[in-house]
Image (cartoon, rainbow, N blue to C red; front, side, top):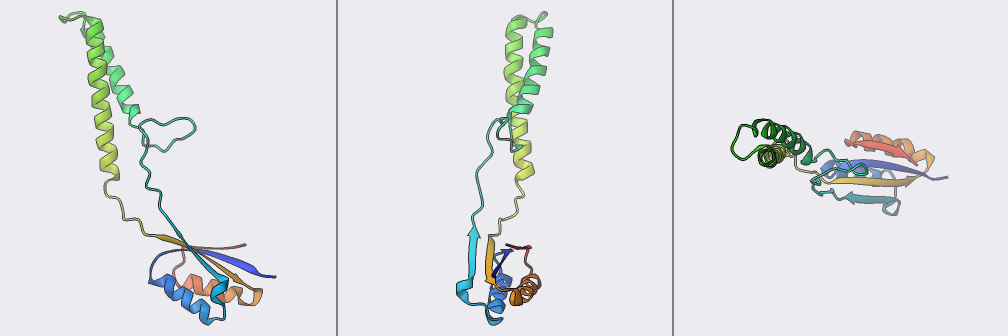
Length: 150
């Protein structure tokens, strides 16, 4: 009965060395599958929903600031020239816009020192029970991120 050993690597020379050592240990190339994973570079949405939450919504702080500034506009609008309704709307627009810009700049600054995405690779090796420990040892010695068995 054959065993499938799965392992993840970053694409480095360590991966190439591990594959070379595994081939030298008697595993044929046809028993090795290497799959490169593409990174998902999709940007976050403006507003999160219940079904999809990624934590990068720009609406939250805009709603909070808009509410606060609208309330202040209505309160102080009684003594100002245009009245409480127009000052409430002005406060909503100023607070909402300011909150949106502040949240956008904060999120952008927090995410700006992005580390460059290293390409990740999954290696699937078909082997028998006698070579399983050798394959695991080779993968672990060559800085595999994770090792699993199917």
